[in-house]
Image 1: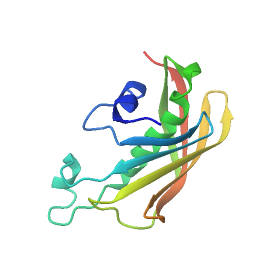
Image 2: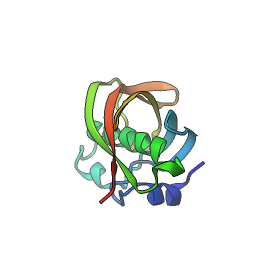
Image 3: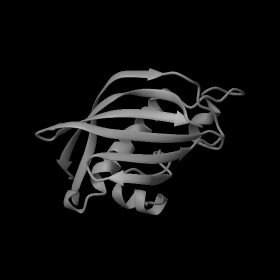
Image 4: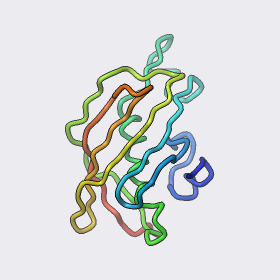
Length: 143
């Protein structure tokens, strides 16, 4: 559906902070699925933790938030808008994610109130849930 080039066209993020490699499914403003290939050569791997790299939970949340942004920003009606993370609720990390893992990031919009969108989010590796929770984001005009 969308490769890295398309993702960089849709999101304001740039390396090393693009946390999504590929958008594989999207129902505009309803649901999206993206892939993140966790690599040992990424900046975080040097220090989290040396000799035993573990993908940081905050970066996993960011990958889910970027997937949520793509769920909205893939809609041509959202041109000129940005999606910004407002909050995280009930996020649980169930398994360790390491280099070599392929994260499947799934977000589902559950409610929209004014400019605030609520998402249920889940990350899996090989079909096993590694994280889940809810996030809130706002849709705003970009500056």
